[in-house]
Length: 223
Image 1 (cartoon, rainbow, N blue to C red):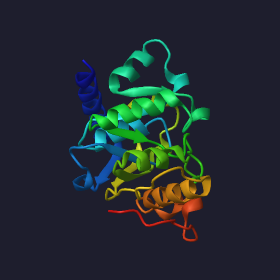
Image 2 (cartoon, helix red, strand yellow):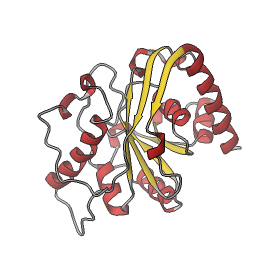
Image 3 (cartoon, rainbow, N blue to C red):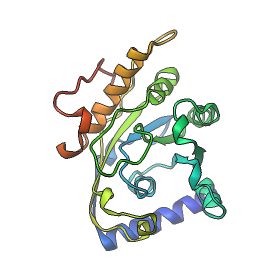
Image 4 (cartoon, rainbow, N blue to C red):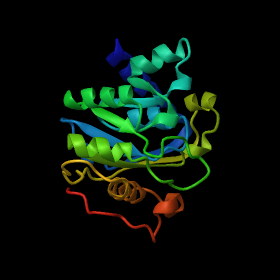
């Protein structure tokens, strides 16, 4: 049932995107089709999770805001592949981190939005360090993805009728350095910055935010 719900939902979303929006996807050849994967993307609107599901040629799983898990919609989100997370606890929610680690050990793909919340009006904001910590400790490849144009979709009810110019740009996967032992906050921030700079490289300049031209990318990840 979960896989059927995911497939049917993505088929419907692709149809809506083709019918109502100018939707483009580039870089699908960069998506590893097997093995564990963290898909790291910017987050502009409620459209982003189904947009990624429709755009990437691989079954994805998601972290979603706990407040969305209301009757009926909560059942759909769980069936679609989402796990409830308190946004104030991203990087600290032990149950969510264990869920992510379990899926990665099963060679599955998990989507993370490192900014931890929707950010429709501004460029990229600083990423939360929990994403880098998970990537380092599991040595899971990260796939940077840039979403542009979805901020124009508006309220959640508009997700079924997406309009405007919407693009998904998929970068090349990379792996963060294998750091042994405890990492200091400054070191985690540097690693997280290196992830965010890769996401920024998949976006038009107006979306770069704090990761614009003067951003320090931190240590170079292994490709």
